[in-house]
Length: 428
Image (cartoon, rainbow, N blue to C red; front, side, top):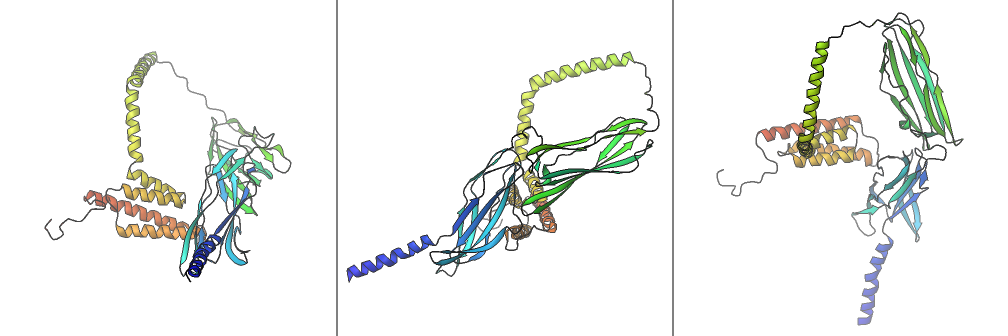
């Protein structure tokens, strides 16, 4: 009986660990290529499989690093299943399009994917964290396009111009508007540079409007437009030159550098240029200002020579104190909210709360945490979608309210995390 009992314990003691090892969740990564032209994408596909079903949608990471843009294509996530060792495993496959925006090598470190799934034989969901493999992607400029600055690679690029207002027979005080639309296919419009920046000329003023970017996507191919407007106002008579527009770009279809241009033109404004008033030289004033300028130069040299180290040290201390202040953390949190960056927002709000000498009201902090939870649900929940602007505005108002409460508490001498008295029954 003892040998049989030992054999029974050995078999059934080892069997669950073997099954558990065979039923660990599976993460598969498929990167179609590691090199691409700047502005073009490589496709990364992640597939997560579990032996049963998922209690919650996976929490995916962000793969963005400086100078790398990441987009999830339309219908980039879908449910999948696979037969493994005769058993049906369920899972989710998600695709990412990774765009290196400049030439160079970009390293994306390992990221974490959080899973919640029903473990076989257990009534409660199991949480597990999987780690992706580090990625290295290169942006390579094609031969012949090394001199392009900025580098733009697209399937098509066109320039269109419209003029609003009369440009013939202008008189001082008249105005017209020049509008330029740059249309690209095969690249995000954010790579397009400004082409008609206002350049003041004596007698001709120019005023630029904020450019408008429009982006579209079709099966992973980005396209879009950049619209610019400059209004010119004639102030004096004369002849003025409106410069041409010129943009070099690399054609992905022909693999050649092409040039898109719009001709400039000349304006003729009626009237003569006003004659500059003639003034006599005041040599006494010239002498006075020459002596004064010499004294200022000497003082600046002495100040730079003897006071520069102390000034630099003082500025360093002031900068360090500002960066370590709670107001700096609040400003960074507010900037992260305006940028719609949830991860940065959570970090800076937590740092601001830790730096506050007097804590904000608990109700307000609870509302802030609820607001952050709602934003996270919009971004990463089952029905993920970009959060409405109202959610971000509500979070900003709650944060400003919490800061006001913290300031009021600090004025009243209330300390954060104050311990209760050692003898609660004794008089204060």
